[in-house]
Picture 1 (cartoon, rainbow, N blue to C red):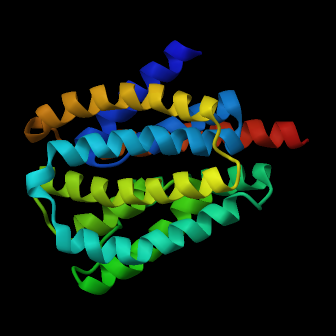
Picture 2 (cartoon, rainbow, N blue to C red):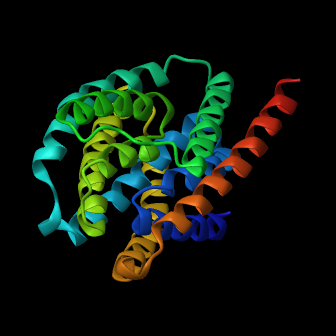
Length: 241
């Protein structure tokens, strides 16, 4: 199991480092399979926090701090709100909601229908919606990436800026999960281990980022997202029946 999670973490790091999202999409369903959704979200949060911080460090000089500030101003309180909600909702139905969300977004991404206006309001509204879903479901990458893509930033600037906002949201979630007793040392160290594998993937991907065909990687992530989510929905339906 450890090696499987490490390999998945490396793949997740490669994807998120190359296109700015996808790590959580790949990581969360696999961790959920081994641990269940209640443990998977905190573990994934720690792993993704490490992954995002590594991307922040690599692209520090290219970060669009104004956009990040607007986004996180609304995203952080909504992330905390969603995290408190996560602790209170039934876990099996939440898994179904999570997977349905992943499938819908993946289909939209594959069809190329995500076109948001390049305005400050997009950052505020996108930050609030992303923060709520991030805290409630443990998934935010696709939404936050769609918001930051409206800025038409260079690849490294786009990835580093989105990672900065994501890291801030993960810090908020970690604090809330700790106060709700959803974070244990076992969960923390499991997240660190997976996060270390993701960092390796980030470093490799961002080294070759100028040679990466972003649309191809987005389609791969979306296709895997649909397949894994469908499998997880079916397995949960069988469990409930």
